[in-house]
Length: 301
Image (cartoon, rainbow, N blue to C red; front, side):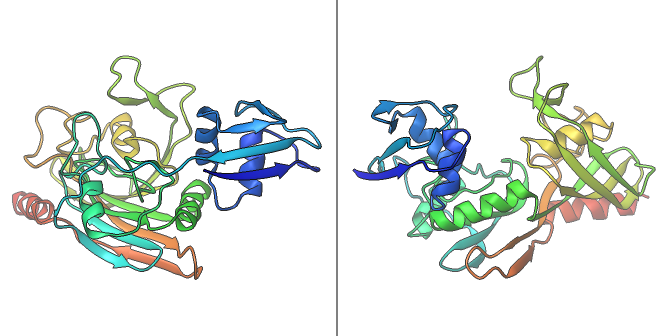
């Protein structure tokens, strides 16, 4: 087990924030997990994440040995849009779960990544190696994967600082009158259904920008850009303004378009490369079923 020792000089604030500022190779979430697991002591005493450091505090961090991942590597085809020593960009098909959970132990993107990629970051734990952000099972499109912890921290910071680019294409119910708009409404867990998110007072800030691309009878094709990354954000926001995503089994109407889930596609992904600093932007075409559905709607008009 490795150990890191830190002596506080002039730093002030919560221990998790101070340590994440001092230890650039370790994320705040990782430090919070070590605090939770009682791997961090202050002056020889176990402490909590809300402890505020004092001058001359001596902090010791016991870094546990990596836990072997109890997830099976599977030879599942994945579309790798870009790969280098630091990052991967994956075009995820609709219907694929990103990481294992109680109901999905195999067939996930993580199972596939473990087979195809030798090195993945460890920051998000043994169930989500390399996963910097996720998209829903029934959403297709681009997501970034980190191959080492330094890259993971850099990419996660860009998401937090809203400097990354994430644009989606969605087909929604209804004909939106405005050509552009911004939805600024806080999102939290629904009080009526624990599986759902909702716009609620006291929720986490959430901002979505939209632009109309095409209108059909009863439907609108929109491009959406995320400022924040809340769970189910686009699906919740579009329902909130009265234009739910077509095919959405959770937030949409029962009578909808036939498909394999919601008509929502992560079309554009952009970020600064964690090593070179170069801005990189990737684009993924709409899935075949999505395109066919649009053609049918155009023919109906």
